[in-house]
Figure 1 (cartoon, rainbow, N blue to C red):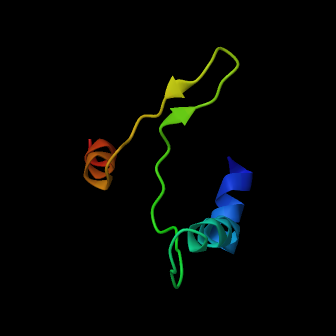
Figure 2: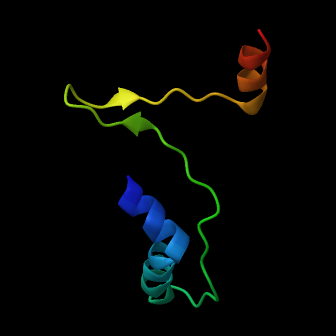
Figure 3: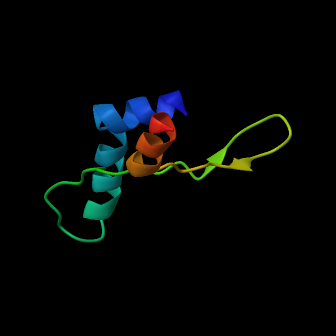
Length: 63
């Protein structure tokens, strides 16, 4: 997971997508601006990730 985040931040993934997409259609640039964790790997198998919104997080801290 850390490697994926590093490649997104460095732009490696964007460059690879852009290179492949230019073979199909002339594009100017590609950017990854949003990512979402769907599953968390574990020894027992992948588990669904729990998504907590900032509002829910704030409410849980206040209580």
